Amino acid sequence: MERFTISMDDQLFKQFDEVAQARGYYNRSEAIRDLIREYLENSRLQKDNKGYCIATLSYIYNHHERDLAGQVTSAHHQHHDLTLSSMHVHLDHDNCLEVTILRGIVEEVRRFANQVIATNGVRHGKLHIVPIELTQGNHTHSTSAGPHMHSKPLT
Image (cartoon, rainbow, N blue to C red; front, side, top):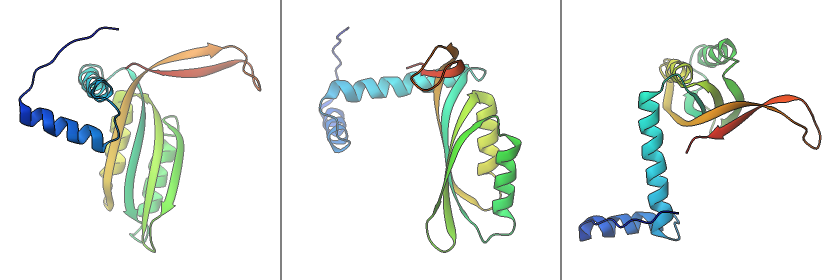
């Protein structure tokens, strides 16, 4: 493991320590590692739209809005190859939260997420992408055997 020293002004250092503690980091090193991972992921995603990713797409919508639920469901069916799983939560009498786990080529995942988020009536849409290496596994697990996909985070 490599070690390095960084210098920063007192105010920035104090702010960093306060945020790291508030987020539950036990030490500065882990907080710095997470910042570096995020920086590397963002950098990689800006350069490589053709690589694979695993992602979460979350959004809120009013299910009473005319045919909105149908439009969103239709978009998911049109991109069933990207969708691994979805969770639907009723927030109140009108609003629903959906969280979808996606896997695919970064460019395609982004395009699909933008389509859903841009649907008239969808609010608070967010996409979180993690670059992965997608490989074919062909070994036995305790309950199943045969080919299956492995998704290994790149950072």
